[in-house]
Length: 175
Image (cartoon, rainbow, N blue to C red; front, side, top):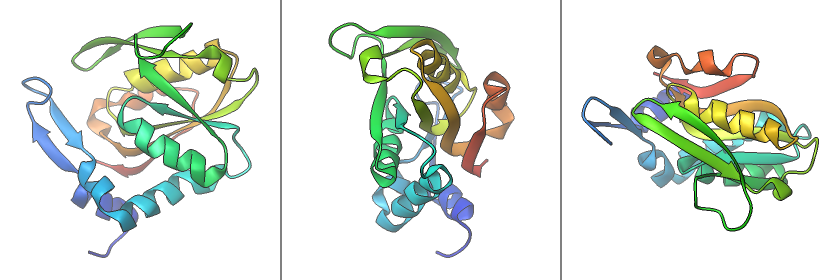
């Protein structure tokens, strides 16, 4: 399949209706992960604008770990997992937030985030923006500086960018 990167991503992402609860359409990125060429192209596209501009890549749980770790490797920088509450051992710093189907909390090990670190936040899908906004607040709370937010796909109708005002946000594909 040829076409732009955005077209190929959108043609590959699968919609799963009523998951994780009725009324929610889940954007399943696993078919993108299964396509080695498309995955490599997406990782490179995420990384290219930030070469030499970031110290860490923060991946948002859970699928943001996949892209975030790969982008960090491509950039030659460290990776910071932003985890759901209770998943990290030892002392953590956390932020609570609302999402489209409930509420949640994300946490990091603050000691893994050097003061003043320039951080690229990466996730798979930007929906309502709650998770990404919480991740950005958490990084700043721990003394880091958010350079930008990168996502594979964005659901424009959910207007997630509203919660991310003041941050540079880029998606490789928008639906």
